[in-house]
Amino acid sequence: MRFITSISLGAVALSLLATVASAGSNGLDGGSIKGLFPGYFEAKVQGYRVQFTGFGNGTLKGEAYGHQDQGYWSIKDNSLCVSWKEWTKGKTKCGAISQASGWYVASNTTGEILRFRRAMVAQQ
Image 1 (cartoon, helix red, strand yellow):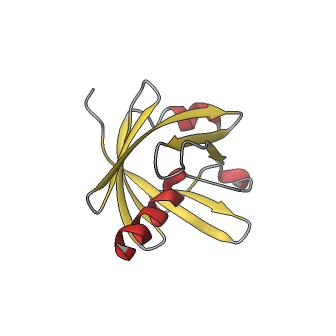
Image 2: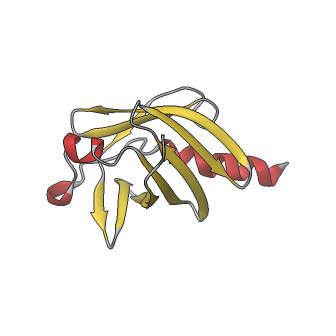
């Protein structure tokens, strides 16, 4: 049970971006972030691998080690905002996205919290 809880907490970081600072000059603008969807992504979150699909209609589906969740994505200013039913308990988290070495990266003032990349285009 403790392992599942750890995985769930790691996946909560996939909430993409609580307290994310400005990404600087290589940050994506709102239009570029919106252009990521629909898409299927793999992510690295606190050492865990997470897969998620972002659909063009603003919905999300994710899986981490057999645990699944559903949520929503949107753009506010130049930030990606997401909420997950379980992983964020329905709370919306927003943050800036930048790119580095083929990954999209979310970082806060203490460093990187999430990296994700496209695995394949989602089929709707």
